[in-house]
Amino acid sequence: MNGWIKIFSFYFLLILSFSVQSQSVETLEKKKTRLKADLKLTSKMLKEVAKEKKSSLGELSILNKQLENRNKLITTLQEEKSLLEVEIVDNKEAIEVLGVRLDETKQDYGKLVREAYKNKSQQSLLLFLFSADSFNDAYRRLKYVRYYNSYRSQQLNEIKTTQGEIATQNGALELQKEKLEEVIQAEADQNNKLLAEKKKKNSMVSNLKKKEAELQTDVDKKRVAISSLDSEIRSIIQREIAAANAVAVKSGVPKAAPGTFKETPAVKALSSSFAKNKGKLPWPVKKGVITGKFGKNRHWEASNVEINNSGIDISAPQGSEVRAVFDGTVSQIIFSASFQSAVILKHGSYFTVYSNLASVSVSKGQKVSTNENIGIVSTDGATGKSEVHFEIWKATSKQNPQSWIKR
Image 1 (cartoon, rainbow, N blue to C red):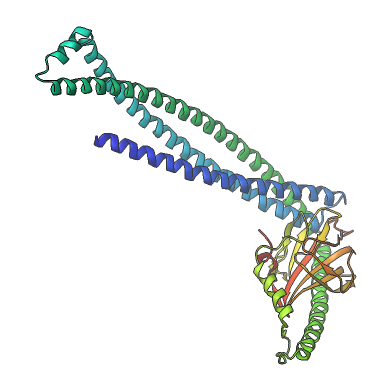
Image 2 (cartoon, one colour; image 1 turned 90 degrees about the vertical axis):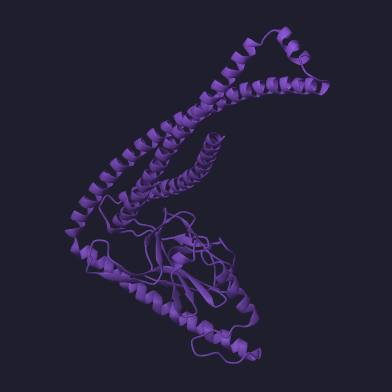
């Protein structure tokens, strides 16, 4: 009996293990799908940039993102491969356990069949019943015979069921082996693509290093755009704060400290609603990849050059619509040669900024809804890259947009 308990316990743990592993594989499949979508998008953007017929910093930034995603996909495939290898081992052990159970059941059933053969005549059964000492004894013997036949039938069913389970496990094992072979091939394909992309990047970097002036111009242009946009945004927000505080004072709300909002109930409700959506805001473009992160960053190929980014840069296909990430009001629309058109939306005490727009489809004071189109992303004529710059401010404090938008 103890042996059977151990077998069933082990079998139960194997089933539980399969369930956990299948969930892990499902998670990896979703991750793979997301990474493949990103790779498809960056490939499309690289083709668009390549139409300029020259290696550019714009192409390099997208290629860097492509390499990053390619490495992540290879890592995901390796994780999936490891999980499948564990599943195959577990499946083989499960088949062995079922085999032991089948052998033991067959042996028990064989003993019953041999015993039944020895006493197969109806006369032996009748003698067994009529040789009883009393009616009660005969009744007990009849019940025993019935139980004996039932138990033999049960064991026969157990043999058939176990054989079916072994066939099922064998089928699953074959599928897992096929899947493993596919993953191994996919990993090899991705590694080949990665090597080709690295070779392309090295060649591009080599060409760009010969164009130090272009690199420095790009850095200077970025710094001017950031500084100019920062100055404009801060000035606009200060005016918004002053106006909001004036309204609050007229409503009987005590005057706020300089540079901070004194929120009326309506402003406070909108600010609270915006804050509750941290990490859940939609992206300002339908499809895109982050090619410029928030805060201090080293330039891709000039490690001695540092850029302090007030928001994030999102590369997107040419002609992409730029959308509001939350309900709000158009606070201001500004233009500069360094950052093109920019739209500033007000969400209570929060502000979102969308710059590097080729065109704008909203007007000052207009109310906008989440995902409403506010403009079209601009394409740099020199680099061929289409990139929207996105910022989030809480009053005059800059926020990291990456922690606010959906993953």
